[in-house]
Length: 196
Image (cartoon, rainbow, N blue to C red):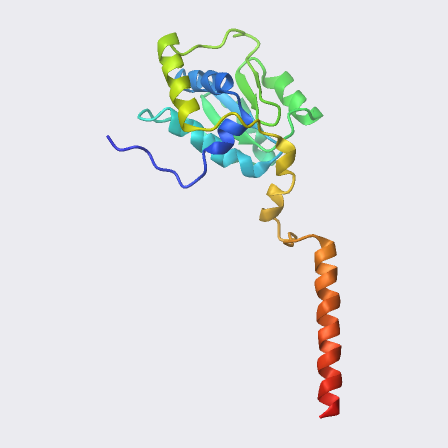
């Protein structure tokens, strides 16, 4: 059997969520629940959601899948079918709290920025993977991934800037220094050209 291949890093999943939370999300996936993965860092959503789909291989997520749901389509959260969606929102914001108040009975909310899972109000006890399988999988994942490093979302403060047109590599002081050096070089070239 061939392993599913994705062209995205899977490490962000293990950096954002603890293994226990990853197993909880996997159990929700395997029982086809509606799951909304939230982060204020939009560039985290697709790699994390793809990694979650990869972890249930050889099974496939057959329900609705939207890696990054645009804000104007948040009404899709009312869909009567199971889904796996990424929401580019800070789960501590009022907007996200309102979403949870409205949809908290049906949707599992996963907060990547704070390593939290908000389970549906009408189903407070999440499903669990069988204990023997869980222990074996945890042992293997710890061996494969170096999970001793705790992820700090503040390390990603500029990661979304890579996708903005306004992003300029380097800081402004470096740019000013380079601009002053280039103006000095231009002035030197002009004065040496005038001497010839």
